[in-house]
Length: 487
Ligand code: GLN
Image (cartoon, rainbow, N blue to C red; front, side, top):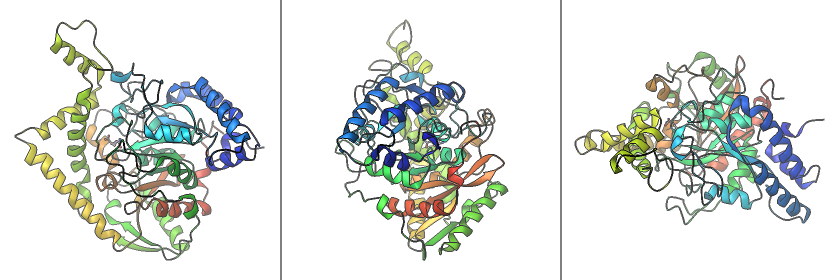
C-alpha cells in the first residue's frame, strides 16, 4: 500500500473527498514525519501541531457535510514570511524572533478559508535575502537529497519540507528566484506568478516592486490547485491586479502541438554547468517530441539583470526595513543607554550580516550624490530588460532555459563570497525584474542532485505555463522521485 506522503496534493484532496482517509489522519501523519525529520533538516521554525489538528477536525466536518471546494482538509506549510494570526512570524530574523502576528496575510487567510490546514512555518533566509537558506537566524536548512548541500533559498525551508515529504506542498515568495531556485535544487515544481497576481498583504516586504507569493509542489497540477485559491484582487494591496482568476486546473491538459518555445541563448552561457545543460537540452527535445517548435531567442539586456537587481532590491529593502527600529515591535536591545543607543543596538543586534550589507548598499544607491548614477540607471536598465521580454513574446509562447547554473552546492561553500552567491540567481532574476510568471520543473539528476528546467511566460500566462509544465510531467517521472531516507 502506498503511504499518505507518497501522494500529490491533488491525489490527497481526492482521497479526502472520497473519505478514504480523514484530514485528522492526514495531518497526524505529516506531523509525525515532521517530528522525526525536522531536527535533522531544520525545515520548520514553528510547528503548529495543535492548531493544525483543530483545523483538520473542522475540515473533516466540512467534508462530512459535503461542503467546500477542492482543498478542504489538505495540509501545507507556509514560509515564515507570511503573517499568521496568533503564531510566531519571524521572517528568519532575530529582529522578529518575538513577533506574534495579530493578523493573517491574505494568502494565509484565503487558503484557510478554502479549508487548507497549516502544519507550521518554514525556515527561510533572513528577510528572504539569500540563495542558500544560510542567512537564517534559525540556522541553515539541509537538502534532503544530500544533507551536506543547501536546499537553495530563500524559500529553502519550504522546499526541504516538501521534498522530504514533511508537507505535501508549501507557499514561498520570490523576489529574485527564491521559489524557482530552491524548487530546482530540491526536485520540485516551483511557481512564481505574475507580479500582482497574488496579494502581498501580510507578506513581510523585502523589495516591494519584485516580491510575489507562489508555491512549491510536486506537480504543476498541485500548483494549479493552490494558485486558484491564492490568486486574485485584494483591496488591501494596491499592486494586486483586478483581473479574473482563470480555472487553472481546467487548462492543464491542452495539447502542446504547435507550441512555440523560445530557447534563451543567454542562459546557456559559460556559467552553466555542462551536466545541467545536457539535462535541460534533453527536456527541450522532449517538448519537440510533444509537437513544440524550438526557436533560439536572444535577450541582449538580460546579462545586466544581476547588477540591476542588486541596486533595485537593496534600495527597496533599505526603505522597507527601516520600520524595524526596536520601538514599535520586534527585537529591542537590553538596557539601552539612550534613544540613539536603542536604535543602533537594536538594529545592530537584530539584523544579520547579509541584511546589513543590503541596507547599506541600498542607502548608498539612494543617497543624493549617487541616486542618478545607480538607482536611476538601474531603473532604466530594468525597463530595457522588460522590453527584451516583450519583443520575445511577440515571437514565442514561452521561454525556456535552466533555472540555476549548478545543482545544489555545499553548505558553507559560498557564504563568505556574496558575489558568487548572487550569481546563483542569474537565470531567475530577469523574470522578477520584468514582473513575469515562471515555473521550474525537475528535468533530471546530476548524481543524486535534481536539476530544474525554467519556463517563463508573458504576464498573466500562469494557465499556459502550468499546461506546458503538466504536459512534460505526464511524460516523465522526475517529479515523482523521493530522496533516500524519506520514502
Ligand atoms: N537570492 C536572491 C536574493 O538574495 C533572491 C531572493 C528572493 O527571491 N527572495 O536577493
